[in-house]
Image (cartoon, rainbow, N blue to C red; front, side, top):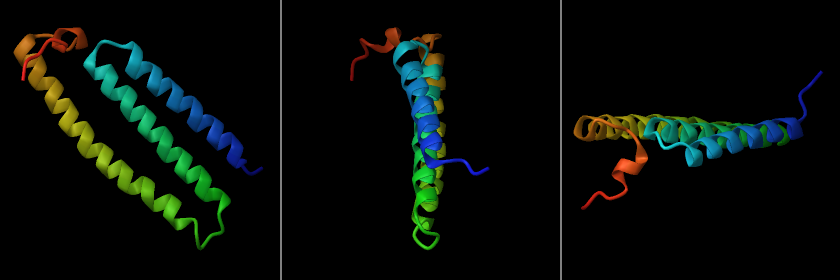
Length: 104
């Protein structure tokens, strides 16, 4: 039995919604970053799901774009977690409310 593309898109939508809810509802900066990463991976899943509907010679773009997005997301996660670690060392907390009144 082959997995239909609509089910892949529904799964991607559910994962994106969970990631968005985590990023919005949590105050912990670690969970905010993890929610953003989850939403980004849902978009990658959606790309691959749409590529499944294309003919074989055209579907390569839908498979290559997520590879580049994963590479960019890895770099973004490294920078984001480094910033969270530096903020934790400065304020001894990773609660987002503590950083709302930071000055430039």
